Every structure is written in structure tokens, then in C-alpha cells.
Image 1: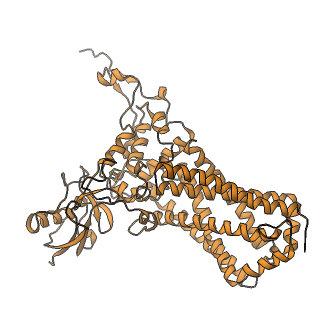
Image 2 (image 1 turned 60 degrees about the horizontal axis):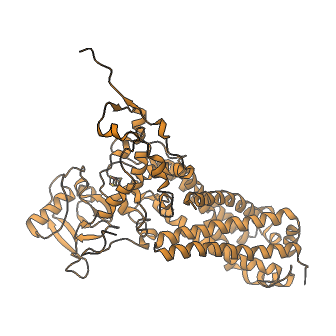
Image 3 (image 1 turned 60 degrees about the vertical axis):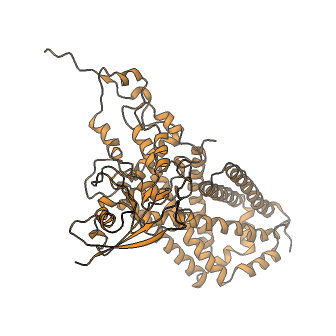
Length: 117
Length: 256
Length: 157
Ligand code: SF4
């Protein structure tokens, strides 16, 4: 892939992350009192409002893609041997897929899972 | 006047195990540059100090070195502007040391050559045996003029944090020249030059730390050139298309 | 590479070139902080995936669980955890606003144009505009962190 495509991805996820993280900071710190924002009941009702779950899922994907692509860039600048370059690229994809899957599991279970005590 | 304390990093990789700092006392005089001080030490104290210089007027780019921690030209730095008491001269970072203050710029020139730093034209015959001139307006000239002042001293590349670890990165000097030639109204090689920099060790390894522009002694502002280059690499479109390049202008027959 | 080896000594700065901006310009310090804060934020996000997973009963949970959420809250909601949050707010706001400056600059938007040089020369790309934007990022980050501290420590919760 042309590196400029990956850089465009980095810029787009950056801009989206600025917007989404701003919303996240506002909901956690300003829209609700903090103790309400982190209470089980508030979070559950927010998750079950579909829009908020979509927002969290978007935040998850955007931040992790941006973050691991950033680490990929740093690692490429650090060492340049052929195996290193190949494993950095593979590792980046694996890390993104694994962390997004783990975070998505939380979102999906929070929305659809049966509540327990 | 008190003598100047001149500290020079001495290191011959063939003979010495590690660099050592050696101090020389140099009588100061008004207007003395660091190069003057080094030459005094070499001429009157220790003939074996290795250093490279030529023009003594910031035109040749030979005497780049790290002076009091920052890359500078020795001939273009006055002792007085450094406080006038102590001057520490070390070889530039990021280049292999040949001896003392002399560094190997071979890889630096290779990277410069790799960006095709010349006007690329489809009318090669015209370049070899000109029948006229490629015209350039003053506006077109001002887009690249500042970048043409580069003397290839290497200071920018020695200051660059990416070059500090990435051996395949072209470095600020080469990237700036890639922009300088691609943005030149007479050039037709922009598309190829830009495509060659769109890889994982190309233009995107610049993160605009700006140290190159901070240390450049000629006002080239490499960071500006590189940032202006990025948009073209992103879109894949050079600053102008091949058929927009200057045409050959022939002087009208004079009535002589 | 032709230049390294053969009686010459390698002299690349290595990681200190990334991490030690001493002797260099203000923008170089911003570069270092952008990189360090980026890694710190990613580390926090990964940890945050772990703690939020307790909302559904932990890493191997199956659905929303109040007891598991109470358990993790007991671990992270204390002065130390809140101090971390304040620091995260600080670095996130810096990284985000400084990042906007970088994107605009890298697309050639806020740099000025090449022009003739007058001495003493100050590079156009390092003029006041860039500096002001870095300061704006720092100030916004500090204000945001102060706000977060007031919420988390000042009884605004
Ligand atoms: S851009 Fe400036 S610092 Fe870099 S090689 Fe050219 S003259 Fe020297």
C-alpha cells in the first residue's frame, strides 16, 4: 500500500478521534456529574440507547487504529531490517484486530447481554 | 583579554578506543570565528587536529560541526556569540566519524542524488544542444529560490530526529531538494520524484520537529519545503503537470 | 551503507535523538511530547479496555454485571486512579490540539510561502504562528486538566 494512504488514514482517524474524544470527555465530566457518569445504572441505560453504543464502538475503532498505526510508524523509524519491517506491519494488524475485538465484545455484551447481579 | 577555552573532541576510529575531549587555550581576537580558533589550535598547538574547511565564508558547506551542542558552520559562528569563553567542537551527529571533526558525507550525497536533483525534461535533445531558453517568471522563481540556496553542509540532516534512527530516510536536505526541483516551473519529473518518496521510509517519516530549519545556516527552511511537498505526495499530483512546464523560448531574429 | 564501517565510527544519535530535544527549538520539544503522549495514551486506552470490560463481568464475562462493576470501581475510583485520569486529560488534550496543528501544517495550510531571504533570517516554518499554536495546545491542556482535577478532587463530582 502507498504510505500516503496509511497517512491519510492516520489523519482521518486523528480528526475523528478529536471529535469523539471531546464528546467522551464532555459526557464523563460535564454533562453528568462524575459519580452519575460512572454509575452502573447510567452506563447501562446509555448503552441500551443504541446511538451511544455506536458512539463508543466508533471511539474504540478510531482510537485503536490511530494509536497502533502511530506505533507502527515509530517502530519503522526505529529499525529498518526486512524481517523487522514485515513483523511490524503484521503485528500492527494483529494488535488492532485483537484489541478492537476485545473492546467490541464489551460493547456488544453491554447492549445485548442479559444483566446479572 | 583572557584566552578562549577551545575543547575539541579527538577521535581516530582506526587508533582510538573512544573519543576524548581535549582543551586548547587560544588567544582571542575581535571577530574571531570558531574556524579561526580551530585553525589557530591546529597551526600552533597540535597539527594533528582533523578538520575540514574550504571557503571560510559559508559558501562551501565543508566545516559543519556540532558547536556547543548545536550543529553550526564553524566559519559562520563567532566566538563572541557563544559567550566568548568556552567553545566545544564535536563532529556532527548522524554521520560516521572519519577523524576528529571530519565526518563522512557519502551517504548524504547519495540521498541527495537519489531524488533526481536536476531538471527532468522530455526534450532531452534541447537540454544537450539548446536552441533557446526555458523561461521562468519572477513569481515562479520565488517558489523555489529559497531552496536553491542549499550548500549541502549536512547540518539539517545531523539535527534530524528521524535520521537519528532511520537509515533509509532521505533526510531534510534531500526531501527539500525533491520539492525544489518538482516545484520548478521548468521541470517535468515531478510525478516520478513524488512517487519515489511515497513509501514507509519516505517523506512521511518527517514529523515537523523543525530542527532542520532551526540549524540551517543558509535560510533554506527545509521543514517548509518538506511540508509543502507532503500534500503533493498525498494526492500523487506534482506541483504542475508535464505539459504545464515552461516551453522553450527562442529569441526573435534580430535585424542586425 | 557506503559510509559506515571501513575505519569510520558510526555516530547516529539513536533514540536520544527522539527523546532529548536539548539545544534545539521549541517545535522539537513539541515533537517529543507528541510522541511520548501518543504512546502514553495508547497504554491508557489498552488498560481502559480492561477496566471497562468489568461492566460485562470482566474479560470473560457474559453480560452487564453490577457486582463486577462495583468490584472494579473499588479498584480504580480512588485518589491515585483519579490522578491518572487528570494526567490522561492533560496529555489527551495536548496530543489532540497539537495534532491538529501538525495536520494543518503537513497539508501546507499554515506555514507561509517560500520567499526571498532577509538576514538575520528566521525560518518561516518556525515563526510565531506555530509557536502560538503550540502554546495554545499547552494552555488548553492545562485548563482541561485543572477542570478534571476540580471535578475529581474538588467535590464537583
Ligand atoms: S538545507 Fe541548509 S542545513 Fe541542510 S544541507 Fe542545505 S544548507 Fe545545509
